[in-house]
Amino acid sequence: MRVIAIFNVKGGVGKSTLAANLAWAAATCSARRTLLWDLDAQGDGGYLLGIDRATGSDGTALFARETAPERLIVPTRFALLDVLPADPGLRKLERFLFALGKKARLARLTEALAERYDRIVIDCPPALGEISAQVMRAADAIIVPVVASPLARRGLADVRDELRRIAPRHAPMLPVFALYDARRKLHREAHAQEPDWPLVPMASVVERMAVERKPVGAFAPATPAADSIRRLWSGIERKLCGS
Ligand SMILES: Nc1ncnc2c1ncn2[C@@H]1O[C@H](COP(=O)(O)OP(=O)(O)OP(=O)(O)O)[C@@H](O)[C@H]1O
Ligand SMILES: [Mg+2]
Image (cartoon, rainbow, N blue to C red; front, side, top):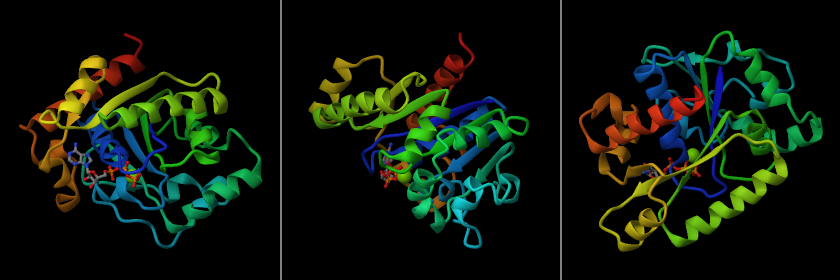
């Protein structure tokens, strides 16, 4: 089992979109038993896979070991792909985890799911704190969506510094240009400076996911955006398998 975190301290950079698409690609392209764990109270990652936020549960109960993850997990309409949905209780999780003082609680919870899943993709809230610190300690790969602009790249340096501080032995970090617009000069320049970073094009078909409530590969497979997701996932999969 491998844990893939989708993380950035910045909001609105495409984390949830990427999390939903990559989780789908893990299940569909690599036939991995996959769980999308939606740790952001907004619940966007699950929403994009057709799953609503849970109303009858409290996101902290799992971390308090008062409930088992199996009781909260729901299947999606896609083979091999389940979601551990967000709920409004997650808004309290930051303070709860801090008070709990168990730095590896999230890692223990993912380990407990290792028999059931091959890949766990975690959609993180846009913040640095105890939740993200625990995710970083549990992750085998950290995917950081960034906008192709000079400011976003500065933000990435902050993420790198912070990662070193909260999780000194953290997994490899993979930046991705997640909203890449080839018509913009600054985007092209950012890409020229980092030609090895994968990119997902800015495309209306990706925005459409919120209407279809499906990953782009499920309703528009023959588009450059869907293609970029498949390529990005196979690169991650290769890294996870050490080849
Ligand atoms: N490649 C893309 N092309 C076009 N629109 C995109 C693309 N990726 C993401 N978006 C859009 O950008 C917006 C932000 O995306 P998303 O919600 O995934 O970001 P986020 O980082 O998870 O935000 P938050 O920090 O609020 O959780 C959404 O409206 C989404 O549809
Ligand atoms: Mg999000």
